[in-house]
Length: 307
Image (tube, rainbow, N blue to C red; front, top):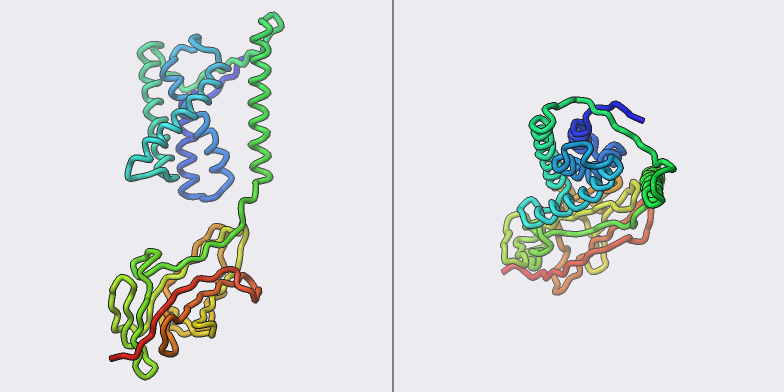
C-alpha cells in the first residue's frame, strides 16, 4: 500500500520549527511534549540516515525507521556530550538549538544529494507500507511483527504517560542568600547605640554604616506539584521580631502564592532588638494555615554596643 505524503525531510524541519515556537511561546504545554519526543528520538537520526542512504531502494522503510531511532539516540547523546564542554552547557535551549541545527544541516545535505544523484527534489513522496507476507521467511515475519508490537507499545506507553503523568517528589525549597547573591556573606556583627543599629559587618568583611539593618535574600521554590500559599516569620532567640521588607515593617511575609515550579526571591532586612553574643536569627516557613513551620533557616549574629 502506497501513501502520498509531504516530503519527510520537510515534515521533520517544520516540526522542529513548531517545537521551538511552542517552547518559546507556550511553555509547559502538552504540545511541546508531543513534538519533543520525536524531535529527540527520531528526527536527528532520520535526517542522518536520509543523508547517508539517498536512494530509497538502498533500505526498506521499516529498516530506515528503526535505524533512525537508534541513530537519534546516538546523535542526541553526542551533542549533549559536546555541549557539556562549552559555555552553553546542557540546558533546554542549547540542546534545542544544537539538535535543530544538526537537523537543518543534514536536511540541506539530503536535498543537495538528491538533486545530484536522483536529479530531482520533490516536495511530496510516496511511502510504501508493506506488511509481512506469508511467503517471507519466518525470521523476517517474526522481526516485522516484533517491531510493530514495539512501536505500538511505545506509543501506548507515551499516551499513558501524557494522560496520567507521574507525580514527582513533593517538597519546598527554602533558602537565604547573602549580599553577593551567594549562600555566604551574611550579616554577622551589629553595632547598636540607644536601640538603633549604627553599623553592620558581613561575614566577608563588608561594612554597612548607612542602612541600619542586615540584608539577606529569602527564596522559596514550589515543588509541591500544586499551587501553595506560603508565609514567612522571623524570631531572634525564639522571640518574634518584625521584618523589614522594602522599607515596610511587618511581622509576617505573605501570603505568598506560588504555582507549581514557581520561584519567589526577595530581599529583607534583619534588625536585632537588643545587644548580646550568639543571637539566633531563625526564619520560619509556613504552608497555608498551618501553625507548625514547614522549614526553618538559622543565622547567628553578635550585637555589640557602638564605640
